[in-house]
Length: 419
Image 1 (tube, one colour):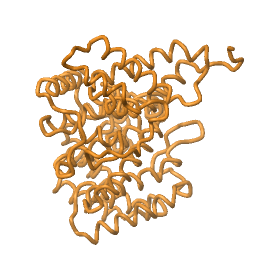
Image 2 (cartoon, one colour):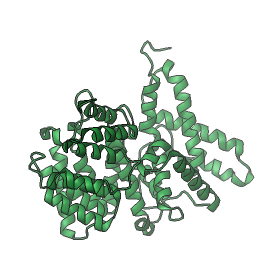
Image 3 (tube, one colour):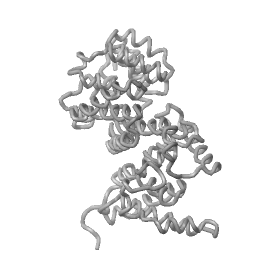
């Protein structure tokens, strides 16, 4: 019987795809042990959903439907391609409990320390045989469901360059015979740096989406925090794990105040701080204090401390900008990075004025990064150099794929004299 309730639109199905892709791939990798087969099976499942759901309606459990359909596609493929030598792989697949009810990510795994499908896949993909950038990029593709364009933007490289990196990473995994298995507990620390980078990039893509109409992707930021909490439970003695968790909690605490009811971007200086999530702030600040007591500073801990200073201030004017600049100095000493230097310049502008900050910004090689141009535009505007500010706003607009950011930048561009 066909329901009278209208089926989901293609954009609604695409939203389900974005939200469930990483979990579906992670479950399918566990089932069949092959990332290529898992990716293709999940893609096939979504193709089927696009064809069927508009007429049949959204299933009660979209995630379960996707995983079950993808599993069936993977079984069909392995049946077609199996030989006597690899029938054991097919048998393992057919005997797997993964089905619509098998999407629980808290199942036991006797062969490794990590108990979460998605977190296990992150650790697995972060194999030391791959370069750090390749590990992070590949895992963002598989777990975050991010497009090549979004990943390229996160790494500040051309899309073609990133596409080639992803192809080379998959080829190396195949040619080297790198197994997709849960790493032993002793292997976890060596992979931790790349794992933390993946979780943080997933969070950042959720907090400020690289493309699309909405400023945020709450599904991604929530998933990153979930993974961060699991990591903190798994490795509570690693200060950088706790630092990353605190950083995400304190940053996420501002989410509700970052947009208007219509979805327009609200900058930090104009946010209603009463809308900040004070429970998340209290939790994040407690973790920061615990990190300080350990006295083993690292980049994520320092970034968390910077956000703790912001969360202490009742307004932008009462923020302790001197302390924030000092923390950025520590961060640059530990992890020299032009993006960090750009954020430090923003703090310098509040502490020493826009002229001092502009001199710092103009020394940075970040032409592909929209925020460099947006920062220059704001500093030039504050200095009364409106023609140059307008050009900088145009450069920033051309470099962001997010509609909310473009609208924000255009509104400031249009307020300049002569626009």
